[in-house]
Length: 257
Image (cartoon, rainbow, N blue to C red; front, side):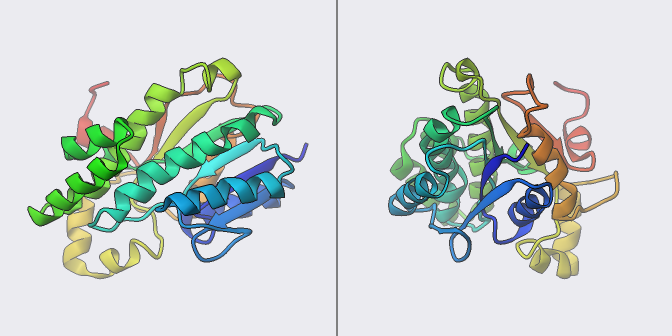
């Protein structure tokens, strides 16, 4: 049976691969992105988040079967926490009423293996408290200290913890809506290409994210996992960050649960 999906970040990378796969399976895939797609919205802004929800409501006639929040950036500046955490939360919370009207509703956000890397506790705490401006201020302080790289890992740690907290609440589990995250390792996308093309940066990336199983992945290798987690077949997996990282988490954290 055809389902209606909304995918943010659908113009490139994992979002595009996921939208392409779902459409090839006969589903309706509404794509949202900052510059291209059925919906054009900047999820780093309050206006863009409202635009996403309003346009989605019109395009899907008030009901969605699944939401895949793929939109993300990896800048060493506050825009990263705005998009990766607050944009994702606004997407999922804003579209939840449409999911509640759907059939076998499911939701998912793209996390990252970087969630297990060191993070800035001030950024993470502010994000989980829902204080966007405090999280942005903490991100600026990290950049000023020369620790701008912590902004990205903090954004992914925050959204992963938000998923864990939120998935089991009445609004989600209580409403029969599984809510999960997929945590990729290094994915071959336009965002990572400049890093991997530089030999020194490539060595740094491979030390930070060791992937003994098949190495770096193409977006098309992640899309089937997303499709299953957001399908009716997934009845009991919720509140999970499912790493699709070629073994990086097992290398970095060993056998700790």
